Length: 137
Image (cartoon, rainbow, N blue to C red; front, side, top):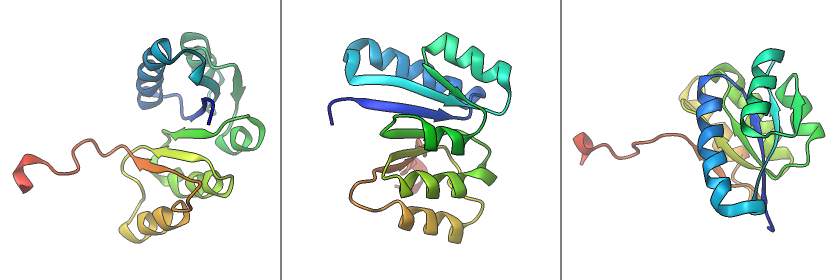
């Protein structure tokens, strides 16, 4: 992979927080990290995110981004109820997937999402910051 071409689905608080971090990483990686496209149903929010962080394309919904953007990785930062459908669509494209927590609405749904996105060409990650908290050690 020459570069990581990222699409962001969900330009709210969490999506913009990830965008700020990705922008900083991009300063060090140069063209090896590209913020390609952002999707959000609120036009003003996606436009602000695109302008602030340099996303070149804007889409009104995540499925349009997944079908129309030249990306190889996606950050899914939407409400939890939308995660399963977007992860499934991204996995079908063979994208690397970063999905915000909680992964799914239930354990069975989350388990199914991980199974669908476990193909060798997909790299799925969830944003669980403390996988082994000190209190469980």
